[in-house]
Image 1: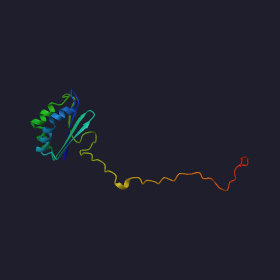
Image 2 (image 1 turned 180 degrees about the vertical axis):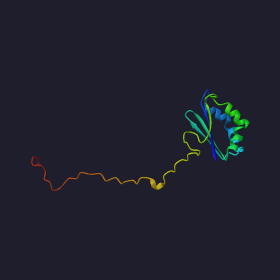
Image 3 (image 1 turned 45 degrees about the vertical axis):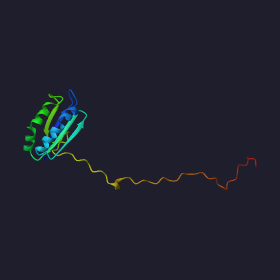
Length: 135
């Protein structure tokens, strides 16, 4: 399995607008050319499309389709706004996508501690009243 990444940066218009125009065609081309998985990720600077293929031949066939060529020619910033590379998006340094960490099980929650009862002042019966009080 190989993950190929297409990063599209915002430019003259938002990468979201580009995605709305080409998303269906890109996913259709990926599926018909053997993609096992794909995902879109929105970033502050644009979009990332990660597509997973069994081998590089599937990627080459996908990349050569007219739909993909047209989509990549229409990115918002055609000079500096397109990156295509092998591996997952971001800076993971690995050829496999990072999986989310498992959520803690129900037993991992902190056990609540009971609150102590409030301290109340009570009069002590064995004390005499002060001597200067009028009875």
